[in-house]
Length: 118
Ligand SMILES: [Zn+2]
Image (cartoon, rainbow, N blue to C red; front, side, top):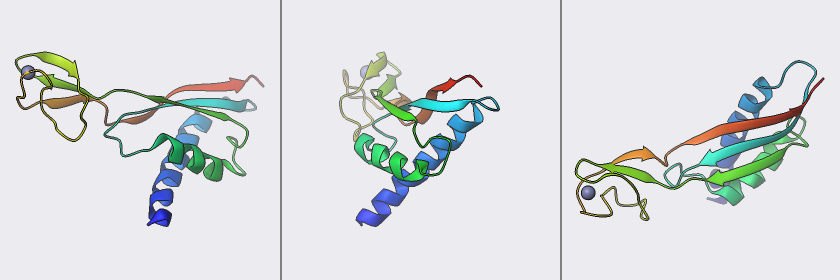
């Protein structure tokens, strides 16, 4: 169980490292990467940090700093508009209780890459 859970985060970390490395110009050194994770992304920040440590060994991201920004779940209700939802388990409008759709909060994405110039 623990193994599966960890493999999940390591796989995500690999994708993050690939995306970050691709943003660094030839000869540059990757120093940091910022990632946004939402409550519906099924990514746990602490696990991702651990997965990043494992996945970055021997890659250009080995000494890079991982910054994780946890973004809130935002849902859209036809009647009330976009609202932050405190409960990721229920996709309902937090104001009127009607059906809502996800605006943001299901993503895992790289939002910033820092590197030293060649
Ligand atoms: Zn509503």
